[in-house]
Length: 504
Length: 97
Image (cartoon, rainbow over all chains, first blue to last red):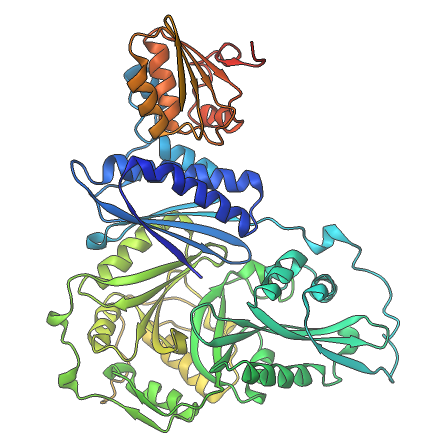
């Protein structure tokens, strides 16, 4: 959950703000040293806002604190005077000889944090984003994960299934490490402390399977969304000595039961496309493909498992509603209406109500300024822009943010647009004119609402490295590649023909 | 920030971080002091505003002594490449007199 402070640009807020950030950082799991450096970075940035953002006048700014199991992020957003820190580098000689310390604060910020980004948001001001990675003890450094499995060669093993408890954290980490070595994509699962924290905070729930001897041999969990009543079926492992015994299916069945009991409105999976195994399992349990996200994960996480895969990993979003859809109101953009209708049909949506074209906002009636949340996944080299209000400056804001993030080596940008927003058709056209293409439907993803996701890969991918299972996923892939004009050897042609436009 | 003045020596005891607010307090009370002793035992942070103030005081010929500064000060001086500007041994009084 984000925490946002609205603060005046007054010198008196600097001390209390850094104190609060320091305490917050300790609470989300940073060490004292890293919390202190984060607080110093915040002190420097807030001081800069107080001194320079609003020359000669009162102003205010927002400070947002955002954390997950592995990162603590602080976002400082102000709408003061335009400024670009990259144009004001610190020069120690100039500082001493001319008493000009311009850029000194930013040099300290850069030193203190693991990631530092500046986003120019045009009319919507500027954002400073600083991130500290939360350090934890890796399971390989804590205890021996080796040791013989007493049930390995037995045919008559019986298994017990139980809801995961925080005391199981270490056994889960050992199981992951034994099974996948260092190649499992969910890095948090190598750190018992993070697993424990997630369970205690109710961020995930799951099933653990133990064999006769008490050894943990299977684990499957749902990660609850922080902003919507859905969960990701995202962590799954079965010990190699206990596969082909139906454990995965029994665990998934139990998980879906638990998700239903907890009142989740849907579950989804991010199934990798370096193989189709995960997609098959998802479909076996009634999930439907709704989107294909190019390059969502960086390649190195899979390299040792799949030697052939050295490009960013594409995933298919598979979704299963747990609360049935009734009527959906959606401003389907003409160019994607056909595909979106097919996806909704697959999700058993009884009726998609498309308002008349006259109800949609034409481009010239969009508001001037876009309001959106920028979510940077530094570890995965991608960024998601979640749009709240689409304005005429949407492409410019996205473009500027990508320029500001050039040093972060982003591989793909995604934009999520609410499907029930009358501005959606015009916003879609604006983005498609700026090299964005279809990704798919993100069902109930933000505040329970359905979003159209568009994507713009920033690196070239080889389509042969993308394996899909369902007919719908195959059609998504075909459509997306066609829209990108990517040929089979992964090259891109400069001109893109629009795919078949479908009438609403 | 607690202040004591003995002749031309100003002694400052910081109750919190040595930041812009503290620098403004210090500047306000400096007057014609030629020697400043700043006790930072209760400060967690020393930021660039504070370091700038120290550089400027030194340039004005003010004799500055820091008592028990937090370790982060040395990092800030290193990042800003200002270690050579200060004689740190002289700047920081290790033991209380």
